[in-house]
Length: 192
Image (cartoon, rainbow, N blue to C red; front, side):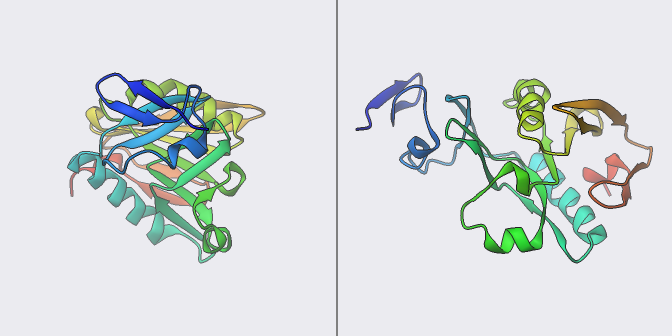
């Protein structure tokens, strides 16, 4: 039986600590993004317009370059375990997989995960998510830092941890080969 736990500044949320993915389905639809890291709840507000613009533009760039069997999708549900639940800003998946997923992707379905750093997610995007996505076996992780012009940081999985990151600064062309060939100037994610 689920209990109701007080959350500082949020009132009461259904479930008990450590939270599970099943507890999340009982949470209110209040516009916040709820994620779990080993049962610990992480709450983020809806993304800002600039954040959304970066996601949209990167998704268009990836979509234009994508082979027919792959597609980029934004804000999908990823469930590595019963105590871990992530909502990456952008992923690339095989279309055959996305056509069959009803609610949640497994980490094995993801070829690339992208996070756009915001003031409320920066620590998680730079540390916790790097470790979590590597542990989940996701081949590539891209981190976009809007306040750096923006800059793109590319991590490649080697064994059970990421190598890198390789940094691509605004004004320089990022030429990438995974999950398929694509090139762009990170500055185009905000301007142009």
